[in-house]
Image 1 (cartoon, rainbow, N blue to C red):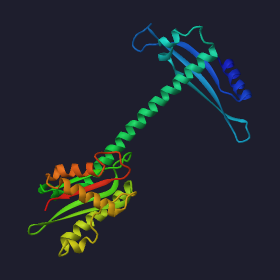
Image 2: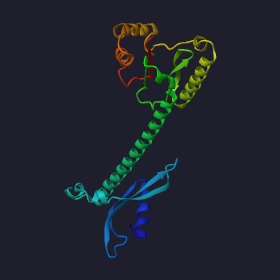
Image 3: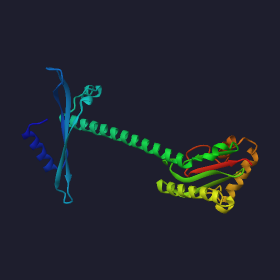
Image 4: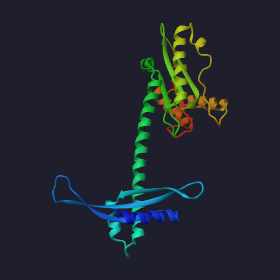
Amino acid sequence: MQTEQACCVRLQGVLDSHAPDAVAPRRFDIPVDGKPGEVEERWWCGMSSPVLGTDGAVKWIIARADDVTELMHSPVVREITPPLSNQATGIAAQVYARSHDLEQLNERLRQAHARDREIAVTLQEVMLRSPDLDRHREIAVRYLPAYGRLNVCGDWYDVVDLPPDRHSVAIGDVVGHGLEAAAVMGMLRSALSAAIRAVPSPAQALEVLGLIERRDEDIDVGLARLIDALARSGTLPVEELAYGLLAEMGVPGGGQDDDIALVVVRL
């Protein structure tokens, strides 16, 4: 972009001033592959930035060049009057280049978050899968992850068929979120499922049943609200009742700050 002498002069200026130096965009005609004699117009700009040490002296100078052809061809540049100085044009081009870098970084982060969320949702669905549940029309389940989470948490439920014609229902909540809580949840859920099948009665395997509570509400208050909601909607089919109870309890959808697991069983 510059002669060797001009480049050395600009770098010395950065070294002396401790300030960045922007080089105005310059046009370069690049030969087109496979088309002899044909060139493509490209515009490049440069920026040299000092890196200071703890003593305030310049330890390094980071120099980079960016393709700003799109900016130089845009109507924004052509419509600026009066024309910008070389220094101002260089700074504008660098701002454009940095914003383009930020846009690309945001897109990569968005894609990474989407992949992480897909993995987390798949993990949660696998962990909450209950094969025996599909055989029970009288049981409905709902799971609502906390807002802003990746859907990996410690809430769980399970339905286990027991001979000859019984079944057990379990619901639990492991403190915390993330893979660690999910791993503990998976171990507890599997252990409880095995114990229920091995001992004479579910009561011996499960000493503490699921409770309705919130961090900012006394459990007795929460149970009272649940009983009132059941009294008003208890005759509905279980699927409709599950939705109705969540609405009555003030959690009709996502957006809450804690995970919610609900199991409705019609006896």
